[in-house]
Length: 236
Image 1 (tube, helix red, strand yellow):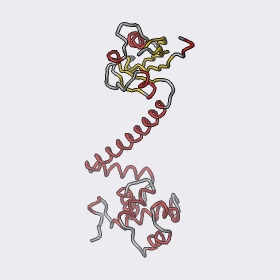
Image 2 (tube, one colour; image 1 turned 90 degrees about the vertical axis):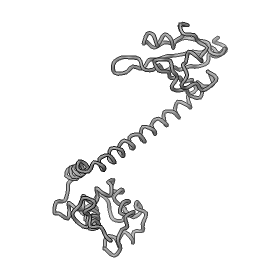
Image 3 (spheres, rainbow, N blue to C red; image 1 turned 45 degrees about the vertical axis):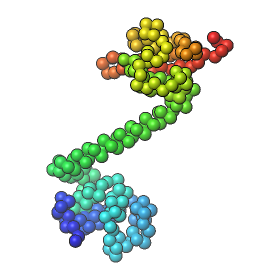
C-alpha cells in the first residue's frame, strides 16, 4: 500500500512530495540538469526521463539516491515537496527552519541528526589523524610524544628503532635508560616549560634531541614533543 506520508510528518502523498521536490530542484532552481542525475543515481537517462514523465516510479532506494545527489536526506526531500504542494515553496532558509522544527518535534530524529553529525566529524578527524600518522611515519627523525606525566602517547617508525621497541602507554623514564634527574632535554623541558636541545645517549646511541612543550589554554604543559636524530659518527 502506498504511503500517504502522514507517518513521515507530511500532509501529502509521499511520492507526490518526492516528485514535487525533484521537479522544483531540476527545473526551477536549476541545481542539476535531468541528464546529470542519471549517472549519479546509477540509472540510465531513459529511465530517469520516465521518472520525470510519470511512466515509471522511482523506488525507495532510487529516491534516496536522488535526494543524496542534492545533498539532503530523503526525509528532508519529502518535507520540501510537501511545502511546495502546500503552495509554500521553500527557500534555503525556510527549508532549514522547517527541518529544524521537525527535529525539535521529533526527539528520535534529533538524536539521529546529532549522531550523524558527530560521526561525520569523527570520520573527518580520523582521516586527518591517518594523514598525520603517515607523514610522521615517513620522517627520517624519531618522533616521540609524551604527556605531562611522562607517559608515551606516540612513536613513529624511527623512534621505535632508536628506543628499540614500541613503548606507547609506558612511562618514558622507565624504559628510556635515562633516569629522572639526569637533566636530559626531555626532563628539562618538562620541568621548565621551555624548549630544549641537547645530546643524550640511549642504548649506546648518541642522539641529538629537541624537546618542545605543548600547552593547554590555561598555559599548563600537556605534552612534550621530542625529535631525535642519531649523531653521525664523525660528530661523536
